[in-house]
Structures are given as structure tokens and as C-alpha cells.
Image (cartoon, rainbow, N blue to C red):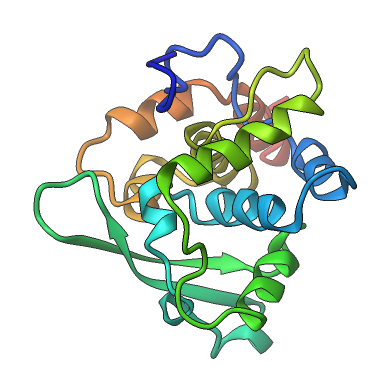
Length: 196
């Protein structure tokens, strides 16, 4: 782990690729968690955003004009790690199990989605760990980003270039690392093509 606030998945022995929708949905079904915690968890996961990027999201970053076609588009989401002003635009499919929570949040929000501080975000995400499966390890914002990257590899067969586009990565280092964690995706692909 990389300090009390920020934590990285590369140094986490708990992260081995996408945990599965059942783990993600179990957080949504936990009656002990606040609605705001679930909304934050959902938004970080579905956007794959860094904590500071998610805190900068406004309702107008979400284009809902294709909702009847089964997806929404996140537009002009700030990428705050780069020195220059960079933005991401990417879709979110509404068939994903927790997307309805994001739509509900958008329907009940005007302006900034989470008008809170960075420390607030970490505090709320860390409350999930009080109730989480101890064998699973800890939830933290960058883990949700990593889970999303691994889920896109597994469910949509994203390759390195698709991940670079989705996350606005400038190099292939991170997507290559995520791809190396996903043997399940390779097995699934080979099964579909009749190789196994």
C-alpha cells in the first residue's frame, strides 16, 4: 500500500483481477451502508475514475440521449493526473448490474454529483470494509478503478488499446499489467473459439 490515503493495486496482494459482479452487487445490497456510499462506489466503479476525477463530475458530464438504446455517455470527464488539461469520453452500458443506481443518482442530482472533499470520499469508501468479506481484502478508490479495468477485459474483451482509450492512458504499461492478471478472460475467449 502507498500510504494512509492513496493506495495502489500493484502493491496489493489482494487484487487478482475482476472480483465478479456478485461481490460488486453485495455492496449495493448491504443495508448498513449509506445511500451516498453506494452512489460513490457505483460512480467510481462505472467511470473507472480516480478519486479526484469523480469528485469533479457534474450532472452535465452525463449525456443521457441514448438511454433508450441501452447506454449513456460520460463526456469531458477530467483526467487529473496529466499535466495538461485532458478529458475522457466513454460509454456506460445500462445492462451492467449496478448502472440503474447511477441513473437514479443522476435523476436526483443537479450540478456536482459529490460536493465533498477528498478525505470524505476515502472515509465513505473505507466504511465498506467494516462489512466486507475479510478474505477479499480492502475496498479503496483505486481498487474500484482496477476492478473496472479488469471487468472490461473480461466482459467486453477489451484489449490494451481499448483500455488506453477508455481510461485515457498515454502508455500501455497499466493496461498490459491488467491484461496479465486476467487468465479467466483468456479461458473464456478460448472456450468461445473452441480452443479448449
